[in-house]
Length: 191
Image 1 (cartoon, helix red, strand yellow):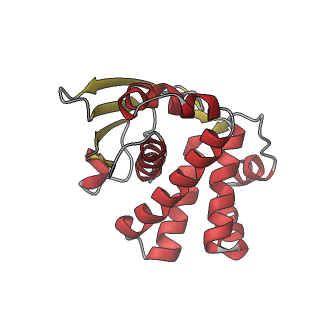
Image 2 (cartoon, helix red, strand yellow):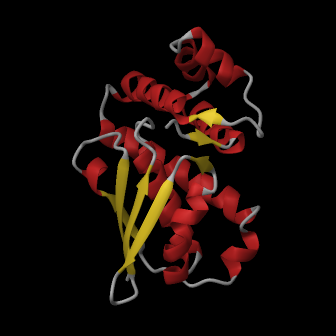
C-alpha cells in the first residue's frame, strides 16, 4: 500500500530543499523525475494527498547532487528539515497540545502526531521503565529515502519543546546506513 503525505507536509519539505540548496537544485531535482511525478510536484497544494515515494526520489537526487551520495551529510540536512517542520506544527495545529504535556506524554503521542500527516502509516510505542523515552516503531515509510533522519529531527525538536533535557533520537536502520526501511525503529532518550 502506498503512503501519502498531506500536501502541506510535502510542501514544507520542498521549501526546505529550495531554501537550503537553492532554486537551481530544486528545479534539477524535479526535472529528474518522470513527467507524471514532476507534474504532481508542480501541481501540489496543501490539500493534495502526495505520494511519499516522489520525495524519496527527490531526496536521493539532492543527496547525490549535493553530498556525493553521503547519507550522513544528507541526514544532518534532513534532521534540520524535520526540526523546522516540528516548529511549524507545534506553533500551529498542535500548539495547545504542545503547552500541556510532559516529555513522556509527548513520546507516547509522537507516533499518532506524525502519522496524522500521512495515510498508510502505523505506529506503536514501548516506554522505558524510567520514564525517559522508549522505542517508537513506525511502518509505512519504506519509499521515503532519508525520511528517518527527518523524523528524528522532528521528534528531537518536539521533545525539547516539551521540556526534555538533551533529547536524543536514533533510528536503528538509518544509524546502520540504511536510508529507507518499511519499519522505522526509533530509540528516544533524554536526561
